[in-house]
Image 1 (cartoon, rainbow over the protein chains, first blue to last red):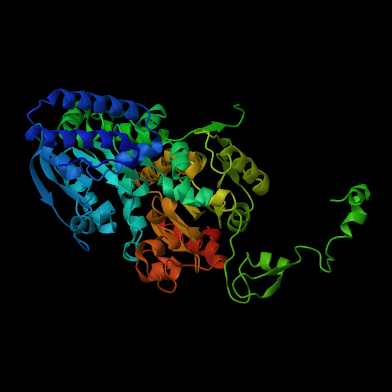
Image 2 (cartoon, rainbow over the protein chains, first blue to last red):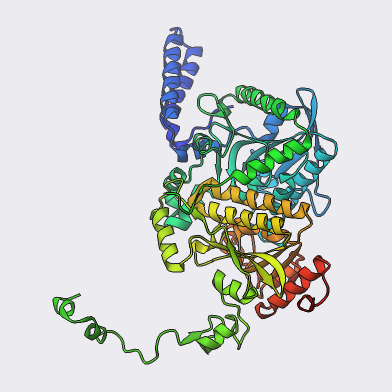
Length: 322
Length: 290
């Protein structure tokens, strides 16, 4: 598949275009130009390295939303075996913007839940652009309770612009559905390991991300509001999104420094979509480590530990402090 | 200001301004029905318009004053104060916005928590201050809520929370999102100990506040016509590109959709809460008599 390049990657795109042209030319040319191709490829690599070494938070947000970025089901195929998808919330409907099911991770039975975006227009609509309605959150909760009942660890994958802001979603209790998940996940008596693989969009992300270990891919983002939304409210100008991205602190590096996430998994040069297999392998290692660390803990200890984490969130000072 | 005005003593300067026939603040206009009301009457009526029943927003302390018995009130978590941990800056610095909000409201952040009693039933009461940065929930709101829950548990008291909030406080980035998880986790502690939590949704209850603990009350009450929802009406309108139904996201709409238990007039709330807490805690029917 041809790589789609983002606006800030245009210099790389131009080089890659020339490499492509030369490859075509090579086929019916008597002169050997493979040396030239190799030289340009090296140059393209070096250029990518330079550009990716100093991505701004807003550029990272573009990578996190890259149309070719691996989605939950791509990781499910690369990280798990025996995946059995489970559908429906048993209350209203099936919501395809969240996938959930049972699977095996390194041979161990587990539950898998994640936001799912679509590739083409048809699938994008089916997946509602990865924006769940209440039934999506309720399905996720149903599968989590199922996992708890049978002592299965839960792996969640976060990749959503946010919960769907629609009339029907409000009518069926979007707020309650998200709140209920936060409530139940706080004391779920089985390990929960969450990975932000793309966009971690606000409450819609958190509703499946209350966890014992929170991992982020290098170019994923996690934020209380989208940079565009924040800019529209605080600057009254959505064009200020790059500034908002900067100040909101949405990147993995910043969030790790602030101790809001536990681990960053590095991505291949140019982002996860340049080499999904390599990304999945790196993630698999991190998931296995987290799983190993948690699997020895008794449910009581696990919940106690999770509650301690949750209660520790926040930065404030006490009167008398400077 | 001209050089002449600068020279004039303040009293004379004022006479240049528009003539005021009525002292400021004596009269208030109802924003819903435009009725001109005598301010003291409005206050006595808990800021509910006597003509059209419109429930105006009220400050956290006015709310607490009307709700709790006069004796035995203790504030909880006032020692918790905000910090600008991200050095957040939009068109203005968060630190400046904080300082301004503190000056305007005389509060240190957007929530006031008190231990007290409602008709002799001991309670912990948490109230959002909407005038403080739109009642947004940041680290201080989350921590004060949690400290309120701790006092509830320590003294075996039920909890009531009055929400009035635009949602999470953007200026605290992901810390504010995590307050949703933190406050809700604290509620599980109450539930484990079978201590009741009543959530009273007042205008407005939106975003991260509605999508965390607000909808999880053992009983969920709303004030009449309060705006309650996850996404703001403008965001929804822009997304679905259709006109929103009449009364959408109002308390009455939520009652019809089965999202809340009841709508209660502000003036009846004190009695209603006492009755409900007495039932949930299996106390005698007239707590005042016991």
